[in-house]
Amino acid sequence: MTGPLTEARSALGESRAVLARADAAMSGRWPRAAAALCRLALEQAVQSLWTGPNASLTQCSGKVQMLCLPEYLPDEHRNLALRTHLAWASLSNALHVDAGYELAPTSAELVTWCALADELIDALDQPGRRAATGGANAAPRFTTPGSS
Image (cartoon, rainbow, N blue to C red; front, top):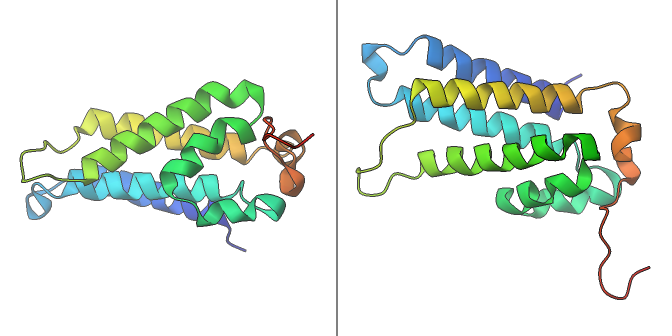
């Protein structure tokens, strides 16, 4: 059975494969290909949180989902959620080339972002994660005006 975390691990593996075989045929394109796959891995990992009452978050932009992430993870993963948002934003920036003046991400940056994606996937794949995050019944820790 495949799910978002399995798909995330697969995309991350592909990102690392592109990173490992940066050859002349992919000259200038491999960094952005690896970045796109790494960002996909982050997005797929985050998708594993949006089930049950949280399913409507799948309709939100990636930016909104990343902004919500700290509210849906346990407190011990708050720093990971913030770093995930920063990595996702950096990867997104690396994929938007304006007039050809933007530099592609470096190999070191890509390795760092892939390691963070691994950390997020591992944190979300913990056996007790559904209970810790509330699973399908998870709700954010904040309340909106008029709610109790």
